[in-house]
Amino acid sequence: MDIEKVNSMDFGEFVDVFGNVIERCPLIAAAVWSQRPFSNLEDLEKHFFAFIDALPQSGQEGILRCHPDLAGRELQRGTLTAESQREQRGAGLTSLNADERLQLAELNAQYRARFGFPFVLAARLSDRAAVPRELARRLHCPPAQELRTALGEVKKIGHLRLADLLGAEQTL
Ligand SMILES: NC(=O)N[C@H]1NC(=O)NC1=O
Image (cartoon, rainbow, N blue to C red; front, side, top):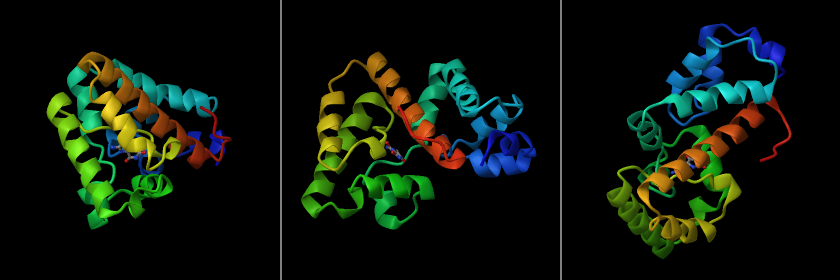
């Protein structure tokens, strides 16, 4: 899909196509549509990220809370979004054994209890061994730093999803 096609989309089509660039936050795509025309993928992405950066902390935490746990209940139940399902499968999180699942569930619960939002990581840039390692490391970070790190991961996920949609080379 090229940028002219993106710029020609009406509101409904744009939100249908880009509504999950930020997981379960179609409101962001709805707001970004008003900023068209976009000059290229980077420009489009800039508007998604600027919206996130402009939110108060409560809104930024709200975005994080829209993310499903990695290897969590939604993965077991098959209720993930298509994008999240693909990302978690790609990282090998669909083929964990019972012990690995339990270990991640415990770390996810500890993380959520400490920070008040779920652990977010761009699964496509990670793998089943690195996820629990990174979770255990970030569990000990100061809350303000951790919020920044988590939002950085949201942006990495969004960048990869946008690049998929526009068929661009994926560089980070
Ligand atoms: N919790 C969490 O990081 N979830 C996200 N990560 C990712 O790559 N896809 C997701 O849904």
